[in-house]
Structure formats: C-alpha cells, structure tokens
Image 1: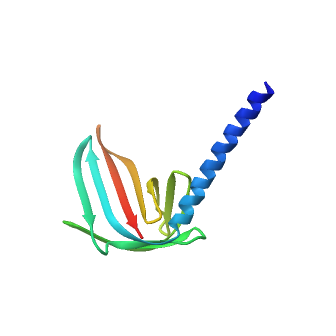
Image 2: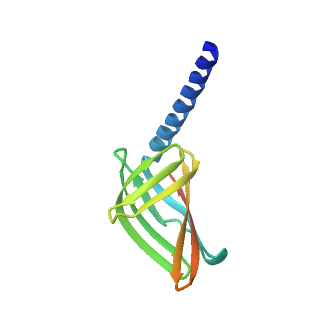
Image 3: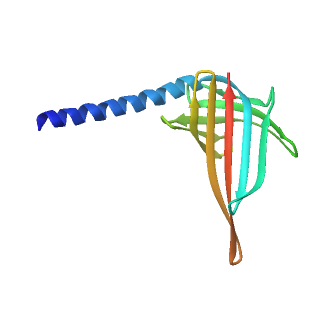
Length: 150
C-alpha cells in the first residue's frame, strides 16, 4: 500500500514539474522581438464561411515580449479588401498551453500555443459571437491564427 502511494506521489510530482517547465519554456522563448509571418482569420456564420482572410508579408508587423510580462505590437494587415493597422502596448501571461494578451484598451485575447519553437511560434484562437434579431439569431465563429518568426 505504501509503495502504491509513493508511486502515485512520484507520478503526480513529475506531471507538475513537466507542466511548470513547459510554461517557463514558452515564457523564455517568447521574450524578444518576433515578426508576423502569417496572419489568418476566418469567420463562419451558422456553419458557412462568411469571411476568409489570409496574408503573408515580409513586413506585416511585429510583437515584442518583455520578461516582465509587458509587450508591444505594431501590425499591418493587408489582406486584399481589408487593410488594418494597429499598435499598442499589452500585458501577457502564459500557461503550458496558452498565451493571453491584454491590450491597454482592455481587450484580452487568449490563444492556444500550437507550435513552440525558438524561431517560430503559432497561436490560434476561436471565438463564438451570437447576434439576436427578433426571434431569429445568427451565430458567428471567428478562427484566428498568427504565425510569428524570429
């Protein structure tokens, strides 16, 4: 019995240490300047594509993550019909699987970390919006994917 308890404690300790180390690894790798390589956004209304935007540019912008949990971005998205320019400072936090970015305007975006390499990071998020128009409503899902490279 005592051996089984010791085994369970060792397994749980290993899981906790691995998740903490992955969290710290992502934080360490994030620090520094990253260029926006690819930005993709798709919006679906009631399951059908409404808007699909994808762009890749040599200078689409940048994100800079500081070790104190602060950062800044400067981004230009020219995805055909829609041109977007923005820059802001932000606060960031991460877990072993996600990164959350909160801009000074109060907007928070939580992304799943899909790829975590020293020279390439890929973040994805999906958000559902529901608009009611009388008795009928429309549900929109927005999928967003950002590829950053050093």
